[in-house]
Image (cartoon, rainbow, N blue to C red; front, side, top):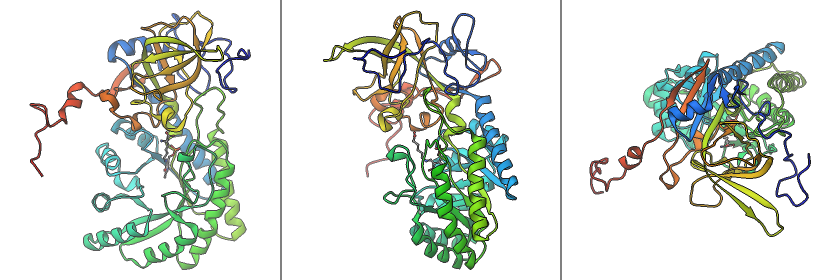
Amino acid sequence: MLPPADSLAPEWLVVPEDANDLASGVWPASAVRDADGVLEIAGVSAADLARTYGTPLLVLDEDEVRGRARAFRTAFDQAASDHGTTAQVYYAGKAFLSTTVARWVVDEGLRVDVCTGGELEVALAAGVSPESLGFHGNNKSTAELERAVIAGVGTIIVDSAIEIERLAAITARTGAVQRVLVRVISGVHAETHEFLATAHEDQKFGFPLAEAEVAVARIRELPGLDFAGLHCHIGSQIFGVAGFRESASRVLELHAALLDGGPVPLLNLGGGFGIAYTRVDDPTPIEVLAGEIVSAVAEGCAARGIPVPALSFEPGRAIVGTAGVTLYEVGTTKDVTVESGAVRRYVSVDGGMSDNARTALYGAQFSARLASRIGVGEPQLSRVVGKHCESGDIVVDHEYLPADLVPGDLLAVPATGAYCASLASNYNHVPRPPIVAVRDGRSRIIVRGETIDDLLARDAGIDGAHAPEGDR
Ligand code: LLP
């Protein structure tokens, strides 16, 4: 069905036959409607979840996370063994990290990539073996690096010449030998939002290919550093394989040149694998991606007459993204008529840009469905907005929702497992929502919700709040 000619709907958004359907690939595989039409995830009713934990609520389907972690591991193991090498998969914790999720992915055979001292502490608190951690970041402080070296973090991915000298000093002081990778920018501009592309030239990460040789030479002369190879991450939410192939080929040129000066056992090609946020998104299946990327590396190595290195990858979004569904309660609805006469319905929910900043930050598209019942009204072009004090506080920019949506209804936004909780804020002093894991008909809190007491606790002007540390 096509929207009316004066519709405010974007071209890609089609009027659904049924505004209650759950598009496949966008929701966790376990998401269904029960006999009463209520959304159910992993056998747990959204209405029960909202009653038990309140809204907004981030629901994470444990089996979806575990299944995707396993699928990545199996796909890359298979592709690597087809080409006579091995592959490690690191879960990129920046997508969403809690001790529980760290344990799930480790349980499924993954390692963990952290990119700040805070993420490092969560992974260590989860009991992840330090040896299986990778530590990223363009501005790791001396204190963060020292903590990582002393804790025995397996790999530190160095990002600058200054960081090399920081590590040289730390390892000289502690007597440790630290394995490092050198992050390079391959010059490939991934086809994604500008802020999500990370390997083009004019940005802050890594060494340009032309400067990396000098960095590697310096590392090789330091007794406390063990150079293991190169790292390149081209960006995030990428659908095709062309960018990965091109980048791998450019990085292999340098990898081959570095073999003249000593061993280069590893190559880490980062993460960035896209997921479906709406029904029009069509990510490449992981088996295909893994096969094509590893083949590209193997072909590049064969062409240069060099051995295929051990490979690693760092998916974040593709592991947790689809596993997350955010539940909101509808508070108000408002039909706004614009100059052309077209109408857009604003549906205000009890969260917003504080629990999902992606729409405001990247113009990201999400989808939504009425979760507490089947809607019987015609599909109505709607915009789901939050409760924050600015008009850019949009959760779902464009969606057709049943016209009979009313205050008190529950709304579910799928594909919020990645980069929603991890980007959450307290804007307007809105507490961050709890995170609940669901599996086999049961639910449990994995991160408790923030309370007003939590918010007040840091305000030194309130009696009984955290005492000020004194005048400075
Ligand atoms: N490895 C490195 C070095 C990275 O910088 C990233 C993401 C990843 C792996 C994982 O990428 P993924 O597989 O999740 O695409 N906040 C943005 C995404 C920022 C990604 C930053 N780096 C968003 O909400 O889309």
